[in-house]
Image (tube, rainbow, N blue to C red; front, side, top):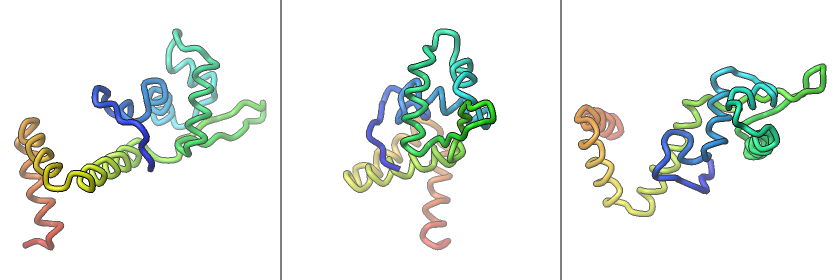
Length: 136
C-alpha cells in the first residue's frame, strides 16, 4: 500500500485517508455493502451527496472499494480488505518506512512510545523480539 499522506493529528484510518474517506470506509466496513445513497446517509445529514460520491469513487480507484451494479442500476460498494487488514497494511508500511529511513533512532522512539502509553506494550515487544529471533 502506498501512503501519500500521514496526518499526525488524526487517528485510525483518518491519519492516512482523510476525514471523509475514513468515514466512508468505516461505514462500508460496518455494513458490508452500501449504495451511494446509503453511504451518504451513514455519513450524516450534513454530507453533500456529490462530494461523498467523488471521494467514494476515488476509494474505488485506489483499490480500497469495489462497486457493482444492482438490478435497479445503482452501484453497491464493498471494501476490498477488512478494517483490520487495512490497518495492518498501514502499520507495516509506516513502520518499515520509519525504520528504513531512521534505523536505530526510529526503534528507540518506538520503545519510548510503548513505555509512555502502556508498560504492557514493552512485554509484548520483548515477546515479539524473542519470537522473531527464534525463541532464544
